Length: 517
Image 1 (cartoon, rainbow, N blue to C red):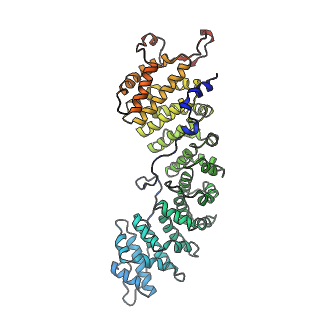
Image 2 (cartoon, rainbow, N blue to C red; image 1 turned 90 degrees about the vertical axis):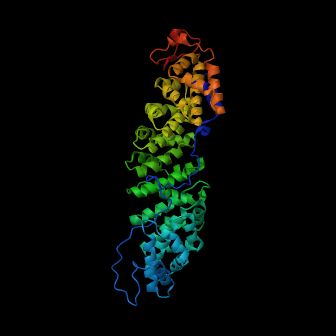
Image 3 (tube, rainbow, N blue to C red; image 1 turned 45 degrees about the vertical axis):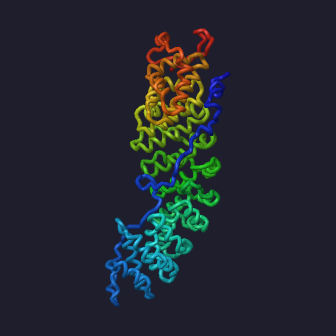
């Protein structure tokens, strides 16, 4: 029986690599506004251009900068289009205040249905523009505020404006649609079911103005977003070839939102991951892992990490594109979130087969990973623990020996003092896998001594009184199986300077095949 067969015989109670790989868990609907590197669900247009060079008003029409809320609604309800324009512009400016815009007050006054009505004024694109902008900023608020825009039937009229000859109107209408799509899975699906995506794809051309292209890609990313539930993949799949081309764009905002869209589309089944890979974008996506722009690097790494949650073939495509050589730098990144994501990505690669694990070893990732396990912040340590334990589940005996020789036991044992039960369970499983591999070769006692010298035995013994039943059971199993004698002093002399050997049992010393620990 070869090393691979031995490992498979006790590997993780029969789990295969697909079961071992961990997709993202938990809610992804939460607002990420607190994290600058993450994409915003909604955007409010607060850039106020100098539009005050307006000729003196006749008929005592108030200036748009001095109108009260009551004057605004009076003007918007007027039949005079010049007054409608000034009042709507004033409404937009009030809603564009950077701090505390009176969105609810303007909704209560009834500006929303009037703005929606103004969207149909094709002969007056300036009025359409101001109405779009006002609706954009109302829709940028809470779900209730966004709902006020949707309930007045704004979406089909905004969609119609995507065909306007005025680029500023197109862009502002798109911005409003993006805020609607970003509000919830329900509004996202509403936008998709209205058939807006094909309108957006028509706007992705070589001659598209950069500002318009940025907004287009952001809206597309919102249409791909959220997983509770996922968007209908058949409706968003047509965007994939466009995203593949946009990965080569030189604007960082376009790149960032393109990568966010891909991170959403790869956060799902293997079939979805394969559809993304079939576009041929993986080499370019992996290349972006070398980006100095965190706004690009964060979603690019997330997308790559999602892809390696797929099957072994899909993981191989990522490895063959050169991802492993990027991981060393990412595991040493100054941003903790990047380190955590990189460790999570590596954990899904080490969840694979022994050939993939060997490539991780050859790439020189393990020492850096163990450094994260030893000194990283807890979230990164937790992901590194998963990476190491997955390694012990799928690696050959020789690979496990190399892992221990590199010093994996000490940081693993240190984490046994964690307050997080799940992390303790992961570490215990990893230690058990190493001991089990050693036991196959009658070397468990030697490894047990190394664990004891790391302080691991004391920690495991203490875990026998842990509140968590799974922690208690795993700790008890290790103690009873590998430390039952309680007297390993006679073996201590055989373990010098942290070096031990896995030797094939029942062989003479001359015949032993050394795997240096």
